[in-house]
Amino acid sequence: MADNNIETTGMLGWVDHRFPLTKMIREHMTEYYAPKNFNFWYFFGSLALLVLVIQIVSGIFLVMNYKPDAAMAFDSVEYIMREVPGGWFIRYMHSTGASMFFVVIYLHMLRGLFYGSYRKPRELVWVFGVAIFLALMGEAFMGYLLPWGQMSYWGAQVIVNLFSTIPFVGPDLAIWIRGDYVVSDATLNRFFAFHVIAIPLVLIGLIVAHILALHEVGSNNPDGVEIKQGPKDKYGRPLDGIPFHPYYTVHDIVGVAGFLIIFAAIIFFTPEMGGFFLEYNNFLPANQLQTPPHIAPVWYFTPFYTMLRATTSDFTWVLSAGALIAAIVLFAKGRLSGIWKFLTPAILIVVAVLMKTLDAKFWGVMTMGGAVVILFFLPWLDHSPVKSIRYRPNWHKVLYGIFIVDFLVLAWLGTQEVNPTNTIIGQICSAIYLSFFLLMPVWSRLGTFRPVPDRVVFHPHH
Image (cartoon, rainbow, N blue to C red; front, side):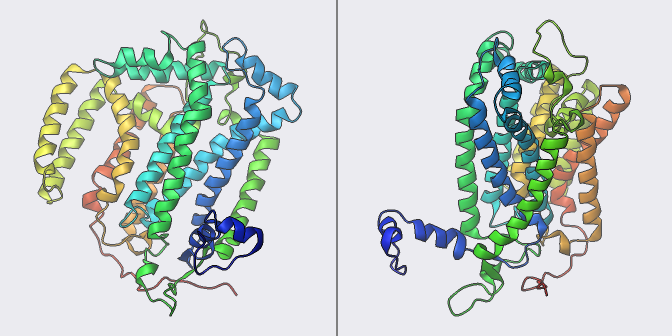
């Protein structure tokens, strides 16, 4: 039934009495009040939705001509590139879109880190967001095998083999994922099903939950001020907010235009991006008898891949010592409370015992997975009295800068061949990445914080 305060007639009125179209537009667009001080960092949420649409539409057209068969997959991709009218454009749009999706998502998450968008009351918004990130990683990994090129095949072989390191169930789990003892036609078929149907459904559900949770609690802003708790007009609308539509829909069009210019330039002039978006080995058909000299995942996985490679037998002891020191510091500072006072020592003892029995490959997988999973706990790791980086001590900003550089170095190392120097640098960078989060309950509280204004700091354009 239409909302009592909405008077609609004609076709729209007919729809409103049967489906809450106008009500949804009001709640999520025209009467959803967002802070008036959004800056360019807030482009990336809408850009992520744009890239999702691009990937779905381009993927539908690719599926029309793709053959999920080990004997024909590579040739079908070549057929799309050479024979299908506009096929090269659709294929490059999809491959470029995959990389640009992660560029946008990484920047979107970085904005959340800068402005404390994971803090109360947005913990669930952040948790849904990290779940979306994990689903995207799964979607990208499954899709990476489909061209059935050399790097697709051997990359999937290496990654799936990592599951075999899990104690007791690992070898059987790896066989179950592949559907065979090696990556084969069975693997291609199930990865195709997951990439085209299963994971997109999960992804869309998580995105809807993410947006609904965001609109329930309201958007954060660069000052970290809750506009819902601030002054309101006589209609109960926050004075520091403006309707999302038309103000931010027009605002986001600027970001969309800039993004599409960059996106088109990559597609038309450098779709391979020097081998970072599309590796040269992937233009060769998969060959089970010829291993590429250097196997590496696509760039957006390389930071975590570096952590996997950096976890040697010696480094596992460094990690365990670091975890022990972090636990001692947290305990001494009173940051462990309730059941964690008892669980943490027990967990450390169990880990120490397991380190005697499990090899470094398993701990590399655990380090790589833990580097992503720890993001789920960010709302409870940050104990800073303020949300936004604007009002934190300057040395906090230096820490954020070190973290960003560290992440970029990890990403670059993942594209390089293994050697003793790169391994040591990777170990140092891995330790910095993990320390940033594990010690956050301590360092996030330290320093002199500037007072947060009662209302958002906003300078209108003239």
